[in-house]
Every structure is written in C-alpha cells, then in structure tokens.
Image (tube, rainbow, N blue to C red; front, side, top):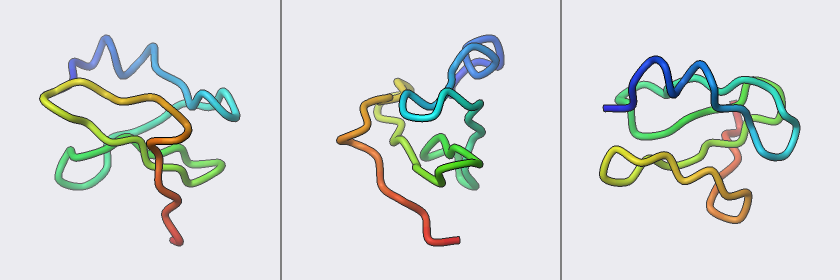
Length: 56
C-alpha cells in the first residue's frame, strides 16, 4: 500500500497535477490528463511511457 505521505507528494509527471489512487489501489490516476500510473510491488511507476489513459 502506498502511504498517504507519499501520495501527498506525488504529481503527474506530464501535467504536474496531483494524482489519486484508483479503485482497487492498483494505480494512480491524474484527474486532468486521465493517465493512470501503475503500482507494482507497492511502488508507483511514475513514468509517462508506463501510463495508460483512462477513457472515463
């Protein structure tokens, strides 16, 4: 699980806006550009090339 302190510091590397946990805590989603960055072994992978774009 990603700690709240870390979540408070993380921003989307593309648009620099805050990210939030997705349902199921499997990724971090930017509310502006809708990119979802995966979480692997409790480590957020904040690379633009690793992100997917959520259509909703």
